[in-house]
Image 1 (cartoon, rainbow, N blue to C red):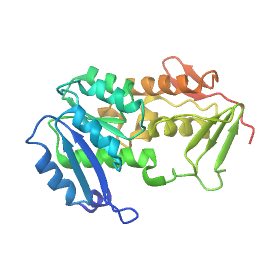
Image 2 (cartoon, rainbow, N blue to C red; image 1 turned 45 degrees about the vertical axis):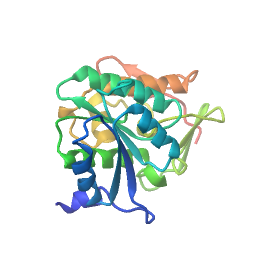
Image 3 (cartoon, rainbow, N blue to C red; image 1 turned 135 degrees about the horizontal axis):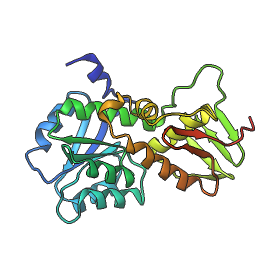
Image 4 (cartoon, helix red, strand yellow; image 1 turned 90 degrees about the vertical axis):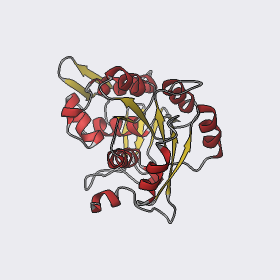
Amino acid sequence: MASAAREAADRHNGRMRRLLLIDDDEQLAAPLAAFFRRFDCELVSATTPSAGLALLKEGGFDAAILDVMLPEMDGFELCRTIRKHSDLPIVMLTARGDVMDRVVGLELGADDYVPKPFEPRELLARMQTVWRRSGSRGAAPPVPAGEPRVMVFDGLTIDLDRRQALRGGEALDLTGTEFELLVLLAREPQKVFSRDEILEKLRGHSAEDLLTRAVDILVSRLRKKLEPLDCIRTLRGVGYAFAAGRVQ
């Protein structure tokens, strides 16, 4: 297996990463767990949402992988339920080619999606991208040399070390993806970023195989959390720009 894949699931602080798979396909968990174990990841599985939610309450997980088609409640409702109490990274497993599944999942707060059927190494690579983007285990986002670790705008403060955004002194409950989007735009106020540029920078993949509407969804979610601040400008047919005035 390529060394890059092994790096994708490296040990951190002496503890294996723990993932929770919630999928009613009983044949999926065992081989997937065996694959992830080779890269220092422990995969715990549940075949029903209720069992999965019970495991999540115990804590200690670094991400959740949710199938869309589930008994009791579908993956969308499960994602919504988890998001009410947690910003845990979430990856949805969707039917290949079903664009609306991906759109709905992202709207509800999922960090990424993987179409079924999939190769385990693809899921592993996607998980690493999500962890890197969300700053899992306190990792700080890459910062250009000389850039201040705290960016202050009118009514908004962005602390890169703490991965925290404050609106009028109040901490915002942002997912890892939303925070990264905010930082990307705020680093270069007034610069217009196209949807493809944003996708490529946030997800680490070529934009060709990704859903550009995902950017509109992420911007909409971020704007709602920033209200009443109005600091993300839309240039119709072009992209988005950060419009808040910088204080320091």
